[in-house]
Structure formats: structure tokens, C-alpha cells
Length: 313
Image 1 (cartoon, helix red, strand yellow):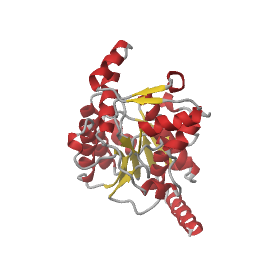
Image 2 (cartoon, rainbow, N blue to C red):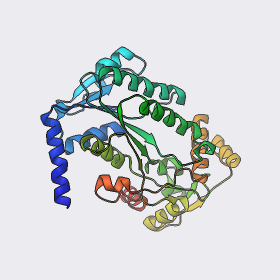
Image 3 (cartoon, rainbow, N blue to C red):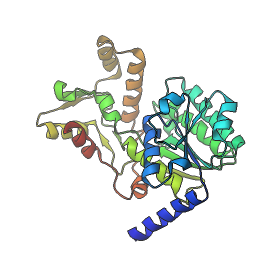
């Protein structure tokens, strides 16, 4: 069965190449977009069948020779239409810049409008996992921004695939601090909340899979890990790896904010950490799903494996 699946996948890829199929990836100099491009190449897509959208072509010099580099700005409609011309499938990587959420959402809508005008046939959009009742979570504004983009895309008349990605496993060390081995403690206001953490690269790999295989038109996928874990588990496993006890404490929001202020952490980071800690405590991201495993043809990297790789590197 596995041999037949691989044969079918390669046949689809070859047909795409034969028909001069063009894929464009936005944010290709970022951590997600660059990995998506890598996985397209690993799966046999020729560089000449790949284009990338960048604001500054000088920042894309490290991309493999043969990949078409197209300049465009989300606020410049004409540049976007020009960049998307001749593209069959567009991987719209959600913006992660520090502008207001509503600005980023408008950028996504601008990209969708330009893609439609340019004749793009299919858009794959990287959204975020969302559970029923999310409107009451601490990250409701963030999730609503993705929801607004999804509504605009599904109402555009274009074929679409929406990837509702889980929270990155790489965020674990951003929340706990990267000096856990020195401090012997994790202080984060997540309570007993859990999340289905998943590696950014494996989400990018799954996005590449969707771009080069069939059967994904007008589908919405939840891409998370098959097991949700919280910071109690994380602290316990780091303790096992290091052979030293790592204590997890979940302070109240006011106490947490006061600690960060005393440490001279910028207000924007305090707000961000508080928001995500509260959302974790609310179980806003603990949705487990096996769709990602199906796309990868293997189990996603577990939190246990991720921590072992990080602390034993």
C-alpha cells in the first residue's frame, strides 16, 4: 500500500511538472515559508516550477537557483497582481509581523483579491487551530483575525485549502525561557492547561504535501499533534533529561506581570506572554487530531522528542 501511495504521489508531481504547474510561496524568507520551499524541492518539484513573494529580493539570495523571485507588497495591489500572474497554486503564509492584527488580516485579504485578479486557481492558507467557544478565550482577537481571512477566502470563488495549524512546539522555550537548565524552574501562568504542540517544520512539510497532491480542494484541515501536554509534563520531562528537578509554577496574572516588569521585560512581551499563558490555561489549543500524521506518513514529533533533541544537542 505504501509503495502504491508513493507511486501515485510521484505521478501527481510529474503531471504537475509536465503541465508547467507554478506554485508561489509567500513569506519565503521566513521560517515557515522557507521550509515549505525546501520540502517542495525535496519532493521533486523543479525550482523553475516554484516562485516566491518577497518585499526585498536582496533578502532572497540564498534561495536555490532557478526559483522565481517576485517582489510585492501587501499594501500595493498592482505589485501583488503582477507577482501572482501565471501562478496556479498560492501558499499564503499568514503574516507574523508586529503590526496590529487587523492590519495583518487586511494584508491577507489584499493578497486573496490580487490572486483572484491574477488568475490564481487555488490558495492554501495557513490559519490557526480553533475550538468551539473560542470567542471567550484570551486569544479570541488573534483567532478572529484568521477567521476573517478564512471567510474572505471561502467567499472569493477560488478553490481553497485552509490549514488550521496547531501552536508551534518551538514556542515552549519562548514561554518557559531558554535558561531552564540554569534556573531549574518554569514560571508561566498556564495552570494545568495543555496544547497539541507541533513542529513548525512539520507543518511546513504538510503544506508542501497539500500543494503537490490532489484531493484538497475546498477542505479545512486541523493540523495538530496526536497528544496534548502541559507544562507539568514539560517540566517533568526536562527533569528526566537533565537529571535535575525542574519545578513548574503557575503564578497569578498580576504576580506574573509584576515579576516581568521587575525584570525589565518590554510591555508588548508581557502582554503576549500573559495572553498565551491564559489561553493555555483555558484549554484553547488542546485539540488532538491525526490528520497531520496522515500527511506526514508518520507520527509528528512529540513534545518529548522535541525536548530531548533540544536539551541533548
